[in-house]
Image 1 (cartoon, rainbow, N blue to C red):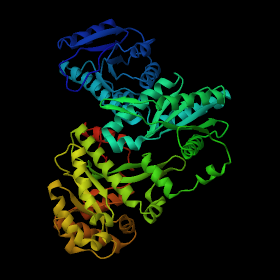
Image 2 (image 1 turned 135 degrees about the horizontal axis):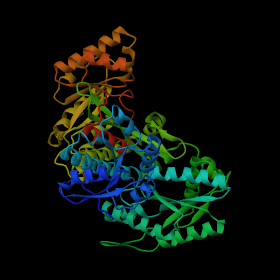
Image 3 (image 1 turned 45 degrees about the vertical axis):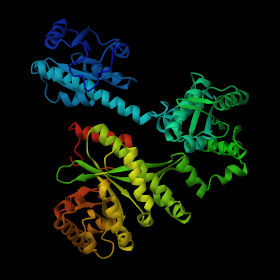
Image 4 (image 1 turned 30 degrees about the vertical axis):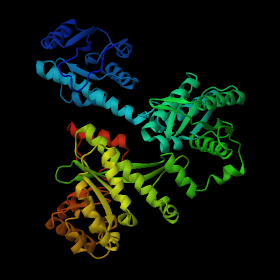
Length: 580
């Protein structure tokens, strides 16, 4: 088994290359070209058959394929190699340079292309190593996208794929499977008494215990927080499921040995059987969730099978205050990032953190679906502080990983501006993220709140100076323009109202207002951002007005953390310009 090549090891270790060409002379030529570096071991394969199996053997770092056979055969092989679970990078070569072939080959799945007649030793070396390193980056990003980094099990996204696959398979075979929702009963006590580090260690230990309870055919995932789910495949009876649930409960009720002692958590289990109580993914997940909360209502430490048409289940279909509290606990409240693109360079220079609710039954909800409910029940600060903490932590992480300095904008509500807690939370974020300050972070305050809480903002600005936090005025253009407030050093960015941007396409008066805001912002040395940009005409118009950046679905929809990482990595490598 070859060892993966890390980005920092350009002079080590050896790269094992599978060279696929029917011509031994071509192989010898490549071997000689690479031989000068003394860091390559080339292996010759003279036919296409069996290449995919060799590539999956773990003995090679890269496949170097001559595009010499019939094009259809080469395309089929490229497609198969790209679909392997642990796909290797594939670089394609031809003897002579062929016009437009590079685009065709890359679109077929290759990582890169060169012609032997034009490539130098240094270029070939760089091409192969870059392909391996880039592929390693993409694999790590894929791992981050589909697996829980703490527990090493599938995350919600990968589990959703597996669940959909199981539904399709069992529908064809007329067979049954089950979902077991698992919630730790006393996990909060561990966090409160021993701290989050012990909590993380507890979750990882619980994942290991659950793995030991399952068969090879079963799938385990961590949904969020202290909730796990098991997809129990090919069940024979409810008695078998009951035995599995009992085993899980008994195993998690035993003390868990941690690095600094032991803890005991216990768990509750809710069970939904396919197709007995549902044959669609969302319905099954919702009903397993309902059963879990019936188990919790019985005091925990037990399991419950979902029973259709129960009063308790019917009540769970309503969106309530309890749903929001549970959503926070389960990490269903999530952050999406919408890029802000510099009109001069076409590059992502900042992102806005947007709150979303990944509801298990209703899908992805924007704040408009639950804002009033959260506000009326006093839960809006809880949600806002959670998003602030989560966004800063993820922002610090991807900036460090990619060695970039992308700005972050986070919305704060008016009442938060008068709370000492806001400063405390930001100081805590600096400590938890191992940062010296929060340079690049902007707290977005809407124009109406800026006027209402002006006295609070002045003191808050002084308190946040050591953290290098700035403010942006959001939703500018609704009402009169607060020139005095805009001229404060406290304001770094002016965000023009999306409604005004929309009106500017049809209304000359609105267009003049946008142009005036951009001009005032420029004179005062502010960055001006136009929100809600949905088409090229809007973007070009805003560019002519002097706006600095644009944000909207024309340049990018809100992205998951994994999607944003991929975009930023592509930008770093020079493979992405948002305005191209």
